[in-house]
Image 1 (cartoon, rainbow, N blue to C red):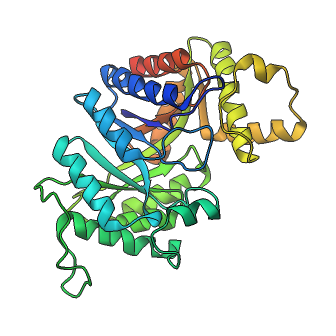
Image 2: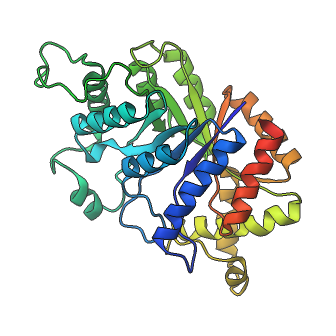
Image 3: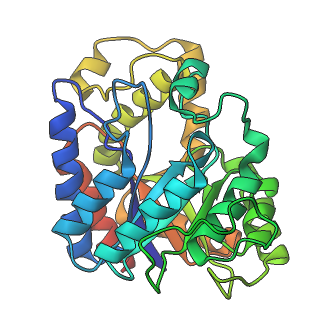
Length: 330
């Protein structure tokens, strides 16, 4: 089983975005030493609690302070951008860091309608064009646009020989089939919506077509994991992530609150129900219990790689969680 990392660079209460980004660099170096396979960073806009708005810049910094771990985007929000520009970003990164870059592509609007309008390059374009954009991106990366394509004579630079692999992020059978048809990797977001996982990954496996990018299907499942030496310690830290997810679902502030601040306020019955439902997106416990649950999910999903996200308040406890997990899995 391979373990990787997804980092949203969450900002803890009382900390600054600068601190969160420095924590991202520290965590990348730490997980590389522990043997993690990839370190991917997310893209979010118009939020006060997540520090990464330009994943390609953060990827460059992470790759510069590490030497082995693969560095990727989880993901670049392609509907907001030009496929040609994303191809040139990907190739530039790969030129600096050969055979270490992954380009994960998402279909999220990236925020509110106003936020999307501020990002998008064409106000008339909508998300239904995502499959076309992915195909264009693939064509720009591999110089494989069809002869009748409007931009056939436009080449994405720098013109390197080894371009980074493409991965599609998704939550449904539909997105899985798009990834399979184009021959990209597929990352299923169990940490967002676990309900469709088995069907989505099966659809990806069943429909995969080899491509310039990948000859065989490659899938990853992304999941929240909080690991500690005791169940009590794991639960103590996990409540900060619980409250963060609760706030996100309610459209409240997205900074991560401290344990003592959370305990000062009583949760309503509705809040407790939301937290209980959100726990389906997570694994929380001791190394032994986390390992057992991961092995069960591995059998369920038929994948050999899990991407771990951890948005608790205490940064040192977060580092410890990744260490404990690595010690029992890697």
